[in-house]
Image (cartoon, rainbow over the protein chains, first blue to last red):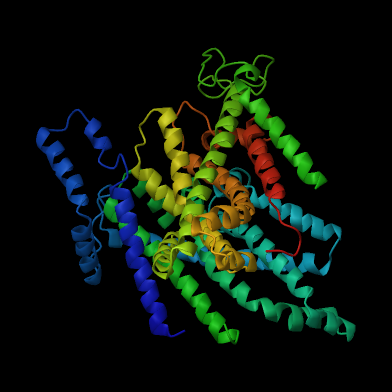
Length: 288
Length: 271
């Protein structure tokens, strides 16, 4: 896969994703309603201006064209609810979320994959049962609840957000890796290796893991998108100033410029992570 | 199979109990008792009362009923859409397929919770509780089609390529008959599987949305709202054994989702 084609795909998805989000928000019933209208102190002119502002938002193509040309010049507009340039807001908050996601994905993979290998190595043992039960339990906890429990019983600030996202990722990584390992273990070439008397560690690293490396790498890309989903409630509950919390604030105040920019950023992160995992796949696994 | 039967019995029993919440719950979910604000459990209020003097047991029963009845409805909407869109992609030629695949890629490129949050935020927030319920679960149902649609498309394509469809085509069977008599019956198990997979996802999504204040409006309870209430009880929850009744919504939510997860689990070795 050429780099140019991958970049083109990222660009297409991000641009179309931004447009789709704008269209969905603007045409959602209730978008034209504004909480500020409830303020009895508002003058008729201000109300009129607000209405005109909302009516302008419905000119989708024109608005989006202006947004894209602004983006090309590095201008991202101003947040209506926070009254600050979107660029400044993103500069403040994006690194917080990106760093947390990077740490969470690493931690989630360390926990999930290690647990999968341990459970795979000891089938039918209490360790396997414990691994399956604990990951099933984690799968049943919404990220917001995990954040709340960490807020109450754990270290509320600092690394709590990283742990919430990592614990949300762990059961998914575990389940997928564990099933892949079991499937790969049943392949004829593994049976042959066992029949030849190879050691279990050699069988695991030379015969079981290599055939599933491609699927595992693909899951790394997907983990970033899953992590972003879990980061939103985690940042809201734990009051972490990242883009998840910003998205929540923008959604509550129907801040269109901020929401479109955030959609752009989130789609960019997700598609770039997937493209990177595709690239890694092509480089490491021949024929993929 | 035995485990699945036990789970089915438990879930049906719970559903019956929740459907009869009106008779089981000692009070209405919005009824306030101003002399019993944030009270501990008593005979009259088995799970105590909340900060507004409302019976916690009644709120838990009604909230669970709402989440447990509407999450399947939302899952049914999303699977129906997935069947339509995925079936169209597999059946209606290359152009449609490409367009639909691009639309699914676009939808899937945005994290699920971000997409719901954005759309739910654009919907009216200060509406009647009944309408907020409808909006919340409709948003979940309407946005959850992309993943299942991909699976349905792959499944339908596989069936179209099978020998019995090939034979039916060779015998001159009309396309409509092929669809209803050959494809639909074979794709039905796939749709059921997607329904069961979506169900816990939607329950957890509602809980996450509720915890962020974007789900069902007060005074109507849902699992999400009940979790949000816990955010103001952090000091009491520091001593969970003394305040065990506050944990009831968490226990019920985790219990039900665990049952659903085990129910839809596939045999070992499959993906």
